Image (tube, rainbow over all chains, first blue to last red):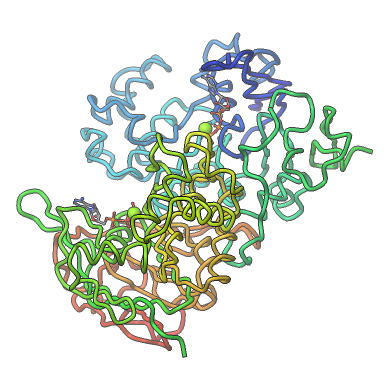
Length: 310
Length: 325
Ligand SMILES: Nc1ncnc2c1ncn2[C@@H]1O[C@H](COP(=O)(O)OP(=O)(O)OP(=O)(O)O)[C@@H](O)[C@H]1O
Ligand SMILES: Nc1ncnc2c1ncn2[C@@H]1O[C@H](COP(=O)(O)OP(=O)(O)OP(=O)(O)O)[C@@H](O)[C@H]1O
Ligand SMILES: [Mg+2]
Ligand SMILES: [Mg+2]
């Protein structure tokens, strides 16, 4: 059974420009993804979503903490690309323009699985069929510039699939696509998950899309997990004040426009101190918020807020 | 009885394409925005939203041509004005916040100075008085008046966008046009700005034409919404009607393309295919090739615009049949 675990993973980057010290992009994040499960990571820009994706795909190393795949440390894993693949946000720059689509799919299959050209070609055609680019022969010779954005994103998913991974990390896979095209991609992800044992780490800033694709939602704020729970519960009964604000703000044609008057992100406290990172915007702020808050367990959920600290 | 503030009649915009082709980006569009109304336009990339907005304020790119049509602000036909007259109408009667305007502020001028420049270009007033107005305008959009002294790089994206909206309101226009005013912003910031716009609009009573591809957001903000597809409106109805009873199959498909936040979770059908090539004249309905409800007639005969109610529009052969989905 596939299982990915992040155990108190932290990632610091050296601060840029004239600032001293470091930026804490991801702060003690723990989460688990089981076989055939889809976990959504949501949070505002800069909350650390992509950093987690890069850690899980070993494009970056944690500053501290452990990532385990199937009980084995990620860094010791020899065949990681056969287990974990990533789909990037930008379908326009993530395919090599000089090679035909067929080559972009066959090459990784050949290298990863040490199979023959012919087998790799068959696998590429199979992957194109799975993502709905049929008949596959029509696409193998095409170059990326001959495809629409949605078709390119399908090729990216096909490229991930030829590796036969257990987990796909999808970092905002539809944010650069038109809504109707993006919905097609989300439906494709759902289809693949129904038909195989694949798992997803689905990254989005859209709470509605998170619920559409994932059973569980993990809410990040400034690198910290503030809430984690089943999608339905997180959206219908958000516990953390930030999650509450996020739910309220997410457009929904059935709801009235919320009356939101929160201070803009710019006017907030520095991120590097120990207290709750959300306290400057929080309507429930109190003295304990200046201290670090532990993640509270509440049945199937976790929340990091003094309101639930008993 | 609502009175029209903006009346667009038969407006068409063309762009030159390669090999002598002509792209008909906006095709014979007619609609009305009432005084004090928030009118929203939604549609997918390339359907002509920005071209329509720019044609209305006559700020199209030089390569574009207005192939036909009239734009009336009250009784003034903007298409007949010369450039100098149009410059004074812009800002004073109609102001536009273009797509990604917040990134087009001058980086070397303070926010206050940029608003003051806009005011004194149109009114004979002192810079000091204009600066007081700038402070008041910032306050109106929920920013601290002291920010007149800030440079754009000192502000967050959301604050810059508010400043740009404040600037558009500087000359008290009767119509504010906003093209994707919150698209690049965080949802919380977006909700805050939209709430603020609605409040200011209620207080001062101007009309708003707001464009976004985010239909759920638009329906929260706008009194009436128009759905554009391939250069034309396919449906215009009050937001509550769009929510309960969208008549055009594309409206329904677009509504469903946004997974709902609340309520039961179910799979939405994808819209197969792509929009038509705007350089080719179509015989039938522009959506027919992708429409799950198309019948033979849809591919050969263009539907005419029908009005199912006051200030409503639907362009579909089968509009009278009860909802088929
Ligand atoms: N290579 C890097 N060097 C320095 N800082 C970085 C680097 N990568 C990310 N950061 C910082 O880490 C924080 C988290 O960034 P990250 O890209 O993970 O956010 P995100 O949630 O993916 O945001 P977005 O929604 O904008 O994609 C930000 O403050 C960012 O500036
Ligand atoms: N300067 C131009 N030259 C040629 N064609 C153009 C030009 N600007 C726009 N077009 C074409 O006109 C059509 C409408 O474009 P427009 O920018 O109005 O769409 P839009 O609905 O605002 O899209 P988006 O949601 O991406 O902003 C598109 O097919 C586009 O390719
Ligand atoms: Mg990111
Ligand atoms: Mg546009």
